[in-house]
Each structure stands twice: as C-alpha cells, then as structure tokens.
Image 1 (cartoon, rainbow, N blue to C red):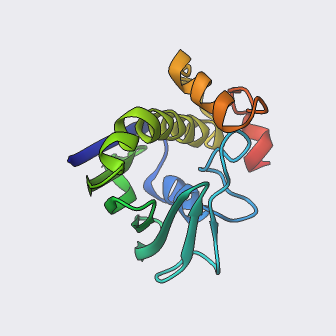
Image 2 (cartoon, rainbow, N blue to C red):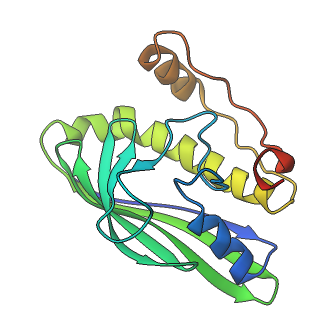
Amino acid sequence: MKVLNIHERELYAGFKEVGTLLDSLASDKDALWPYDMWPRMKFDRPLGPGAEGGHGPIRYFVEYYEPGKSIRFRFTGPRGFNGYHAFDVISVKEGTTVLRHTLEMTTSGRAIFSWPLFFRPLHDALLEDSLTLAEASLGQISQVKPWSSWVRLLRYVVSGGEARPQTTPKWTARAG
C-alpha cells in the first residue's frame, strides 16, 4: 500500500529560528521532538548523514541532512516500512515559515495492516504534538490537537497502563 502522510504548521518566526529547532533534534536541548510524551528520538552519533537510530520500534538512519533546512530519515524497521520520513523548513515570507513533516512509503506484509490500525494514529498524534512543541519552543501560543480515544487506548495498551498524558508544552521547558 502506498502511503503519503504530511503534517505542517505555519510558524510566525524566521527561517533561521525554525531551522534551529530542526537542528536540535535528538540533542539534549531538543526543541522539536515531544519526548516528554513519546519515545525519545535517539541516534548512535550526532545528527548527520549515516547516523542510525529511531524512536520506539521505528528504526531509521539519516539519509540526508542540510542543517537548518531539511533532514530525511530512511526506514530500516519495522519490517514492511519501505520509504522515508523527513522534516523540511520552508520560507513563506519574512517572519513566516512552514515546518513540514512528510512520510512517504510503501507498506508490505504485516505493515499493510499495522500501519493504518496501529502506527498511523500514533504517528499522526506524535507529529501534531511535535508541531505544537515547535510553536511553544518559539514562544508562540501552542495549538494542541487532542488525542483521539483510539490513540489514548493504543498508548494505554502499549505502555501497560503507564502512558504519559498529553500535555501543553511550555516555552520555558525547552528554550530557557
């Protein structure tokens, strides 16, 4: 099954400011990945081409990285995820920048079923939380998209009842 999944948010900040969020991924000062609610993005070395890692059961390596502009991750797991996911910083006009996440893949085997039933709802919730954190990290009012009942149930089951609740990110929590 072919999958094209795009999440984006218009941010009222300059290109360089938004690019700084991208460059913070998987670092101690990560201002883009909502690791307080989701599995942390980790790599075997600093962010750059060839770095291997992922988050939770999702495995990938950095296929392409242009600091402050774009990063592309090539999936290596789970089995049946054949493609990539990427963040891109897109200048709209002075003081307005779009942060876009694109997932493009073809699923095969069990992933034909696990993607739409399990991974997609969690992916969509995580990406919306990431974009909300981007807003907060830039000192903007955060647009929290509440998790669906299905996402809350999946998180409860996967965590054995220990899932962290959705929170509204605070600017000072990451950017201070």
